[in-house]
Amino acid sequence: ALRLAAGAECRQPRQPQDPQQPGGLCGADRVAPALDPVGRHGLLSMGLKLRTAWLWLHRWTGLVLATVWVLVGLSGSYLAFGPEIDRLLNPDWATPQSAGPARPLAEVLAAAQAAEPHRFVHSVFPASGPQDVHHVWLTPSTSDDSRMWELLVDPASARVLGQREAVPTADFGRRNLGNAVYTLHMQLLLGERGRVLVGLSGLFLLASAITGLVLWWPRSRAGLRQALRIKPGARGLRLHFDLHRSAGFYASLLLAMLGLTGAAMTFPGEARSVLNASGATMSPRPRWSAPLAPPRLD
Image 1 (cartoon, rainbow, N blue to C red):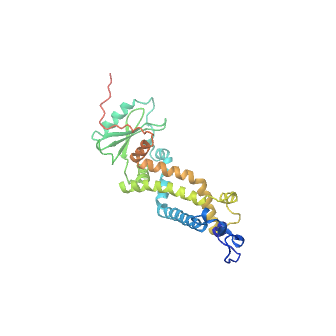
Image 2: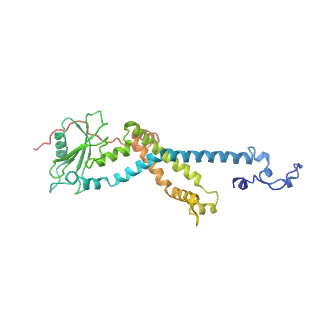
C-alpha cells in the first residue's frame, strides 16, 4: 500500500529516453532532481524506518511494562474508593465513635502526639465529612520520612481510635489493607527501586500514548473514518486490531495525563525543578516536624 501510495511502482515498461521527452516516465521518476534532492524513494524509506521505530517502541513498551501498569491501575482504582472501603472493614476505627462538635485541630494533634511521644507529626488529613475521622501520620524522626505510622482520631472526643503502620507496609490484613494497597501503588512493595520503577513507567505510559497516536494518525479523510470505527464483521486478529486502535485513540489523552501526573507525583522534586525552569512556581508542602506543645486551656 505504501509503494502504491508513493508511486514507486510503475507498470509501464522503462526504456532509455531523452531527458527532454519524459513521456515514458511515471510516479517518482517525473520529479525533477533539482526539486527532489533526496529522492521520492529515499523519503519513503526514511518514513518507513521512522514508522518502524515508533512501532517498535510502542510494542515493546507495552509488553515490558504491562504488568506494572495493571498493578498500578488496579491499586489506583481501589484507592479511589479507599476511605469507603476502610469504613466498611474497620467501622470502629474509621468512623466517629462520639457525637458532638469537633474538637479543635490543635487538641487532636496533641492527643496524637501524646499517644506516640517518640514520633513526630508529619501530615494531617482532617475528617472529610461527618462519617470520617482525622488521620494523623507520624515519622520516627524529623529527618526520616521513609516509614510512616498512622493514628485515627475521633473528631468529637479527640480520642485515638486506632493506630497502624502506614507507608510502606505489606500487611494486607483487614486493618491495614488500604495502606498496603497504597504501598503497592507507589512502590510495588519494592522500596525505593519500586518507586523509581513506578515513576519511569508513568513516563513510558506517556510515551506509549504519544507513539500510539502517531501510529494511529490517518493519511486521509477516508482513513480517519476507518480509524475511528470497527470494521463490520471483523473477527479474530482484525477485530482485536480495530478494538486496540479505536479504544487507544479515545483513551490516549487520559493515558497521557495519568502517565504525566503519576510521574510528577513520584518525582516531586524533579517536577518542581521543571516547573520552576518553565517560569511556573510550586509552593513546598508545609510539614510538621517537631513535637507539639500541649494545648493551652486559658
